[in-house]
Length: 538
Image 1: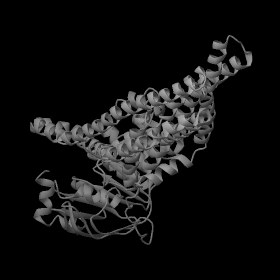
Image 2: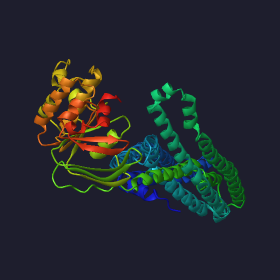
Image 3: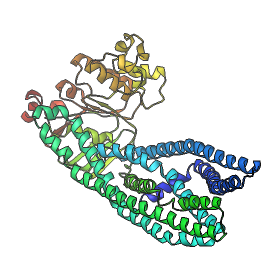
Image 4: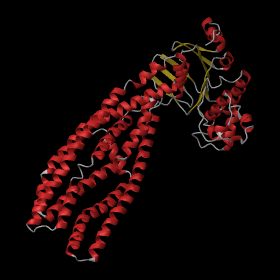
């Protein structure tokens, strides 16, 4: 029965020409393998008769050489095909995960499991299929060769074919469910582990390490059950195949012995018959490949699940670059029924006590968080800076220009606007200083992150407490520099400082996930509860 990921596997195979090269190479090597028992039989008969035919010996050596070279070329091609298919699947899956936005419907650990393990498994589909197809063709060719030697040999062997096919079909049916369950539970364990690692300091501070360990390991019985199911199925297949293969060989050998007594076969042809019997049962011997095929299909199903997840609807464009508007937006318990309209070029400060939903609102405005209900209207590119930015890139300059094609001058201008240029030029290699060797303080790292947002030249700039580590004077300088560097741009700043709110055109005051009020800082300051946001601490 077709699985959701089968179409994806077909696409992975069809996009590359190398599987055809592997198939041709396998066809040549298989042809040599099918001719080898006959050539060996001729050599044995030649030796028993006391004659020497140079052509027969050379032909035997040539066939052996073809098999050796074919195997070597096949190993190289298989590795190339698998790596290219895996890379394509990982690119495709990563792009889809990024397009789903934040928060993703797939937990971080589960997404990592799909990008790494599942893509690696699915990437080997071409090699697995070609191996199985070539083995099937080789088995069919061996049956034909047995018939050419003596039709009685083929008739005896044919009795085993239905049993072999039943074994293969049963193995695939019994393995499929356990393989998929194993992949799914592995992803769940990975997701829980990533959550625990990311929150390790909180877990340690709360003294709940044992509880978290239990939570992470809770799915292990399901994982063990699925793994045990796979091993039981494989073990059952192994002992059945282990009985079937020698039984077939004995039956063929006995029939060939009667053929020698009747003068129909030579001693060398008996040896060839045994070789062809082993080749004919090759499909039964491909138990690891059959299991790998089911693992591949299960992995592709998990990848297809992500690729089939609809991307959140594209946001309708609002008139005028930099316009932001929320209509009845709710995000879990963090935001509830938020209505907000910010004209282009507005400098808005978002304030509120701890847990009021400030960062969630900033994430929604910046496009980093999906909404549960309501509509978001946004026009123009968004630049985003964080309180604790994750700096990426080989050097300080590349960390600022990360994700853009900004040149040195643009990187420098962004650093000047973020008030971090003087810090960078004092480093041993300036903008070429390796990021790992740059001793940045928290405030300097914040300004590097701010420069990274500025260099994108966005219509909307969202700063989620991105200047919290700066002193008031430096923050004011950054504010003036931003006005100069990005004139007329919409700015949304999450802040807990009254001085920053006082400079804003409009203040958005949040309380318990709702907009308590909007207006200028001076007007809102008349409310005692608003003043408590700053004077009561967070």
